[in-house]
Image (cartoon, rainbow, N blue to C red; front, side, top):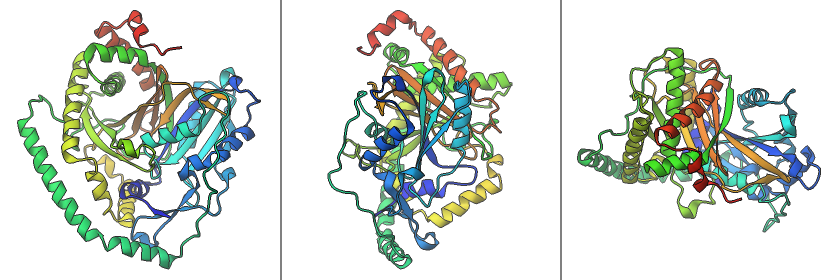
Length: 478
């Protein structure tokens, strides 16, 4: 048994009927590379043989009575992989629209909290004979970085399927009684006053350090404050419905822009997303009263925590500089603000947010989240930020599932009231795979934003003189 961290528990508490806090990924595979006939049953067998490489897959929640403290993870004594791996197909012709429609519907379904918080949908019927796997895992169990590590663990480096034997047999836990759960909670809560005092002292010092740094900074722009974002049509209360779009961008071109500008790949991703949203809002005739603001999750996972699961993440706010006409100027501004944000994060410390989430009361936080949704409060104030944009580095080498080579891996991040769009990017080989999750009742056609990403990349590449000849230096070795 293991208690959820405060941040893991927060992702559970924030879940409402219109906002499900699972992260997902749509991986597309070519089964023609498999050495044996590719089938659903074969996929189930491969996953079952590797469950020991994915500890969250056999852990379920044991909530503390009355929500007095964070729940426990226990090894599920009733675990059955057939409850988690499912089979479906898209209607002909199995193109992007059909796949995206299915992903939108499946993303709108919550995970069953009486079982381990994950499910996988094996999707057949794609054009060109391809297949897809949609994986859903609750954010309480993983963040973007640990989710990527988990994905790689379940895949192979070649069509040959490796055998992974566990070091020792898996042992399920006994379900603790309510009295035991309350006893565990009381022991943990008894130590909280000391932890609060330490957190207060560290937070006060960090606030002074950030203020001093701001006074001494030479940056022309600082990271935006919460609730400084302009209101847009997608910063409202949501319905439970979801829509999805996906596309792939040329990572070699992005790296060439990085070499020409000295900016990071993450800076360029932010500019591309901001530029695409600027084009989308221009098409609607909806000009915000200031630059859009993005919430950017930042991994604080240290090298020795690479194999740990759960959430090791904080967040920063950045301008997308959408009030500037020139894409080069937007990129320069984003780079400057993100550099300042990173410096502030170093001063604040990686553990500050996680420390304070330890003191959150799950029952109270959950009721507050549901009240916020039920009363549509997101419609009454300026948004905390406009859009969630996450960039997760992925493998630069090919991966295989049950012998089928992965062609693309499109991430699917959660959305919530007041933030009806998530744009998550994951690199794979020479491409940036982009997944866009939205609520169709606030964004009519999310494919429009996906299309604008390509136009923005073309304009940015032209602005810095990046052409096809420049890409050869960044090509992956064959």
